[in-house]
Image 1 (tube, rainbow, N blue to C red):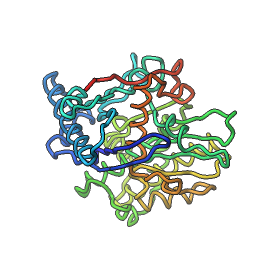
Image 2: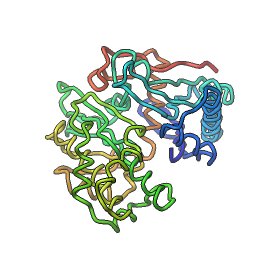
Image 3: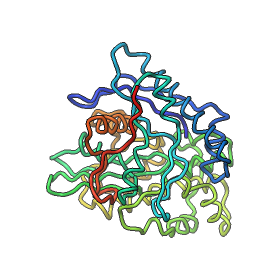
Image 4: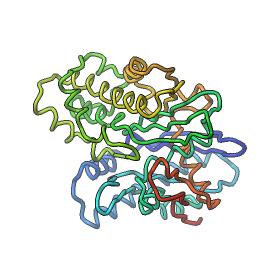
Amino acid sequence: MDGIDAVLATLEPAPRIIEAIQHPWPAPILTRLRAAASGTRLSASEFAQLDSDAGEVFAQAALAVSDRYDQPIRAIGSHGQTLAHGPDASPPFTLQIGNPAIIAERTGITTISDFRRRDIAAGGEGAPLVPAFHAATLASTQENRVILNIGGIANITVLPASADTPVAGFDTGPGNCLLDAWIRRTKGFPFDRSGTFAARGTVQADLLETCLQDPYFKRPAPKSTGTDYFSLDWLERRLESVSSNPEDVQATLVSLSAQSVADAIGESAPKCHRVLVCGGGVHNAVVMEALRARLPCAVDSTAAVGIDPDWVEALAFAWLARQTMEALPGNLPEVTGASGPRILGAIHPA
């Protein structure tokens, strides 16, 4: 929820970003989104209003980037803002808001949204969805790669050099979400710029071990999670049994993100030659240092292979929208656990 990433991209002959912006959430809407995602109960009318308000802001973001281009735009792919993700619930669910009808109406551009629920309906986790894009654009026949996205939640895509080995991928656990939540709680900052707050602290081994005992980390793939699970409440329950100053907690949360990622890569991609990192976490020097200290392979930004790490996720949903428009699958069943390939998303015509 640190902003809306919007890219204007062409996908032929290869994905290329033409324009890119991060559009801010208005503070009152951001406050309501964070409250809803953390479990605050909404009435039906309050939920509907938030959905429409978010749709208006998404439309503004789309217009802000598309107004810089004088050629026709085929479609908008809108992931929406996730408020809840429960693939293990009975019945399973996922919820992203940001009324796509409003986006299509305000922009005059066909809008594809609601990418995750079809995969869940087919028995999948509904996440991660970006591995299909990673496989199509970032795989190499020369090296075994892992694409690591460090957003609120961290996820990996395992891309073997051999075409005979299937792609794998899953959410590893918290990326930036706990780091951001803790510094907002203790310092009032939206995030820990460059990891400077964490760098002043000392990792607390007992707190780290308590956090790593969460059963999610031991679950086999396919698996996915969300910030509604790895939340400030999740952290505070574990802080009840330890005594640490705020900087030490922040340092420990860096280790939690890095260790859970490294454990996942070690188990699922032991012969990895290179990890390519994207997402906001790539700018946290302390997180990147912690990853390099724990991984036996090279760790680079996706910029090393020609894609700005800040825009990989947004570019992926442009690609997924194109898949939907061309009636092609957008999921990888071997990643999500769905019963088969599925065309994802709902189309809202211009």
